[in-house]
Image 1: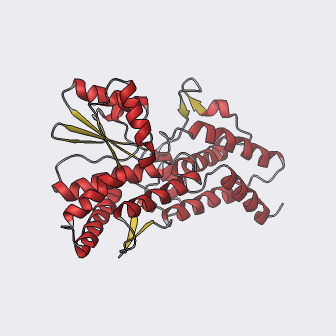
Image 2: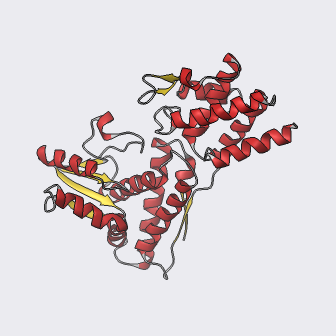
Image 3: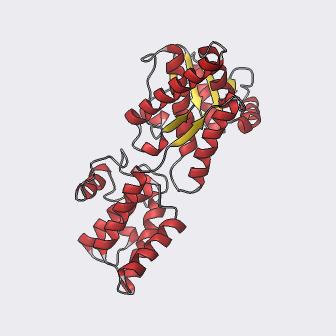
Length: 315
């Protein structure tokens, strides 16, 4: 089989298994390819898991290992802060990729140098991915503008596995909007992958006695986090998608907290501030949106490793 045919098989695998554009999956592919070179093929996927195999992690997967591979190809940018280790789909991705590599080995075409180069090129594509787009004109409401960005994030999310673009965009848009309204330094920002429990946070943002939770899925677990806020004398605010408002209100009501949690849809939450910051003038609105997008992009640079999360603003 020719090198072209090998690349074709790799491309088909990457597309079918949603490895393209997913930093967690790309990290798995790089590290497992490297382990195949060191240990030889075929690989036993059960020997590549630390822990009990369900709650464990992929052995050897981490930022250091991923960056060492990329450094061989003169790439210094960080692919994933945790090297894909915290990705929920890493073990599943590893198993499917090991099966693919073993099949390539069985038919005698597992050229690991070419395979590594293929994945490195996908990493280059990842870093070169285009940002989301915002355009502002008088024919569109501010709510529609916000919705458009989230729609783009959800579309990209549907094309990859293990990367929650919509949630990340929502969290950092809210953070940027709050910075523009209150001034920088009033609260702490975090990467989207940082869990509240892991970091000891009360929510995504803590401002005064208000704990703000930003989520695409206002599940019972989020409502319970709000209950914990109330137990700690904090006022919980939940920001979610417009289409999730009814579910959020219902879950809060079922938990006996219906009248104790303030729930907003993100479009309204941001749009109202745009009008206020822009002093209800057309040029002011453009300036306000530009400032929020600029601050959002600064947050992405500081707290995320995926530059495609950025937003390009067209006035």
